Image (cartoon, rainbow, N blue to C red; front, side, top):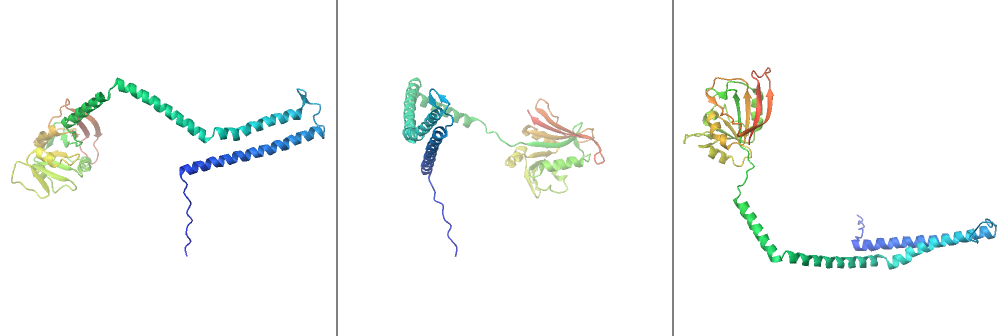
Length: 312
């Protein structure tokens, strides 16, 4: 058989406060009785020392024996302690504190009422309500007319030579493995917007990305893609994406530049023979916020720099 667990009774805060007050009073009274017994025993002890054993008979203070003065001083301390335990706690106890608090609260309420009358005279309630309504109306109108700021950041990502060359015959004219890794890392999980020729240059669909293809051909279809016919339609398709990427080619870059918030450009420090070019970046419109140089190594024949531009 399982024994029932004994439940601990719950004490509400008011009962707990009363209990603590009573406990402190009992301790005070106990100490008072202890001091009283100590006082009696000490007084008798001093008297025996002086009268029976004659200790300190030659010592006097103000014409009295020393032990009488000592007993009087001790009696004074005892009376003081007695007053603190009995008189002060009885007449200036918790009930007295509560009455003082109530009187103080009443006084403060009267002062607040007087202040409220002064405020009402200086600022009539009707006038305040009118101003409040005007403020709410103005704020509502402003919110309704202000354009909603989108958190989306349209990003253009590209690699171009010093002469803005992108490629030739629908293909790149360089091989930069680190740049390919950066492109994959940045675009994975997002919409990638491109022209038809750029899409057809891919050997297969890029994994974990939504392909949006722009073409003027109304009959064009490609499996695994969303086909649109304008850059606006492409951006509308990707409106749920916080950072859609425009990935080329040259004509799409030019069309999408006015809709772009950020340019991630890999600038290859060499000029190339090309038939597709990246548009010129106007420094009055764009601010260079970050650059990272990459030198030549065994995998990269050309030095290049990652450049991040933000629209001013």
